[in-house]
Length: 284
Ligand SMILES: Cc1ncc(C[n+]2csc(CCOP(=O)(O)OP(=O)(O)O)c2C)c(N)n1
Ligand code: SF4
Ligand SMILES: [Mg+2]
Image (tube, rainbow, N blue to C red; front, side):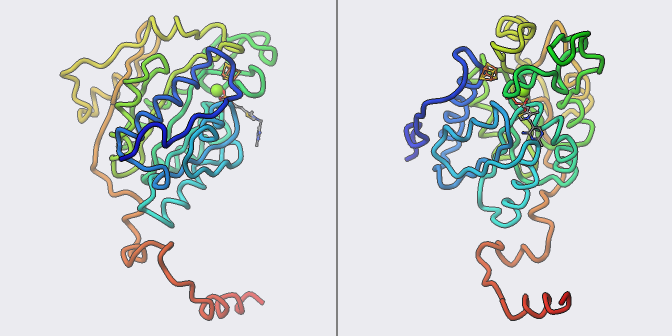
């Protein structure tokens, strides 16, 4: 039986007090709760402090380019649908440079779980504004304060009909560990946004700032009610809801839509080199 030790313990390069430490712990606990062995899981990440998280896990890892984790994860899932594919990266990586890939993943409904560490800043590159930085947030690169309105991923995901949309907070390890197995079990694209402090470069949205605001969705909340989910997803400010905001199994995942893939995974197929050569000849 899988245990938390199977996922290893490694020295990290994160600042003491960074929310990433708790997220890493919650992810390990969530994988164990999902009864997944390390060899059954592939983590794909981009570049950033959050994107280092899979480096500290004993599982399969592909570390791609900044903003480009989702296309790699999509390819991996199509080639081997048996694999549990998880993308883990930051708000800059997934909502900025990789923003269009996020929209494509939702539209395609690829069976990948996306964990976004949202610290509302670019941590690795030392504190520039990210797409989720709040208006007026002052940085060395934005000395007059951020002029753009922040990106609300949960609201966008619900609007676009993503089948699993959740939010958690690095200060709630059990909460996040509880959501992860549900996201992994969801057939199709699942988004978990995790709010986290960056103690070095975000002195506004601190641990206390999130702790004061984050509240768990009440017992009777129905994540199947899309209108309610639209309202909840847009709530941000003095109160920030955490939990499974929206869940719907209405759409088939991308990896189940192609007739060619019904004959077994690409991974298991023989490579027919003679046919491949004939195809290549046409381009000579
Ligand atoms: C194509 C490309 N553009 C920009 C960068 C520089 N870069 C690396 S990490 C990063 C931002 C990281 O922010 P985020 O994704 O929020 O992660 P965090 O460090 O906050 O966890 C940027 C802009 C890069 N490495 N590659
Ligand atoms: S700079 Fe911020 S995000 Fe990076 S390790 Fe330090 S606290 Fe965490
Ligand atoms: Mg960030």
